[in-house]
Image 1: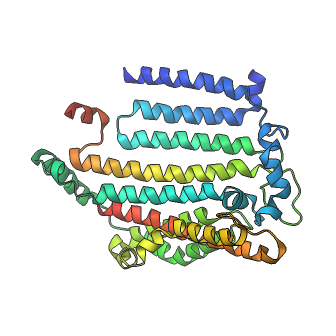
Image 2 (image 1 turned 90 degrees about the vertical axis):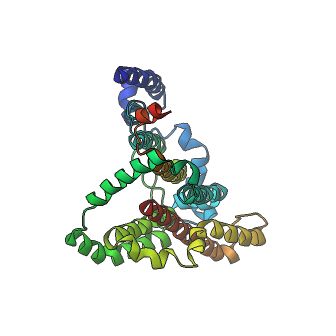
Length: 249
Length: 117
């Protein structure tokens, strides 16, 4: 009974979408509005103006730097919300007898179904770990020249951390996760935007401004790399922390 | 219209993906499956925006010395990067809420949760 209603609703939304899509400019048409407004300017002048050969990085960190700052704030806020939900005391409703019994039973089921880590998986992950870390560093530090950047490299770093945690057990990760440095790593993305934005304000008069004049344009590249590294460390730390806390609960 | 649909088959694919996601959100009772459906819808939107930015015979917008146009538009790719980060954040938050719901009620099936009220 539920399925026909769902299909009807989906068709109701899909038909207008298909009609709208048919009315768009043809795919790949160079004269479509998406290619003729700001994009044309970015492609023509972006490499000199933004200081990054990879225009995606240039647009992300320079033209739309405030947007990226908001983005790292979003992911940091997500971490705060996750920790608040998972670590919140929640004493009153959860201590009712019936629900306690249900979750205990489910918890016991889960314990018994955890499979031991295969030695092959364990060996391969530990063998590849340094190479994955090297690749992440390359993606982060070379992100303004070739495809890549802070978010992408940070995701690779977090993936490496999570793979290691799966193989070695989260207990092995505690020395890294429980240091006094951990909050600074989690906030690294936001902090790097604050620092680089303030430096930019002193150099150009605008928050997150990047100097484009000849004597200072090397500083601009350094600032972009600093942002990339900050985003990568912050993003990786946030993802890894969320994983560790979900695993622990 | 059929001709235009054939020219815009990339966009139609996004619509199909979006509809699959919407169906999962509506029809499935499991909260994690519902959220997977939402993630499929997000992916469809990202694919749509990226496809919009592509140009015929376009190259990646990386301005090395000898790069020749036409270049794909860098702006949609940047916007999608932002969108992916937001999608990751919402996914993490939703999974956390689902963990919390499971701890309290012992189930994540929406119909069972409705019966408990």
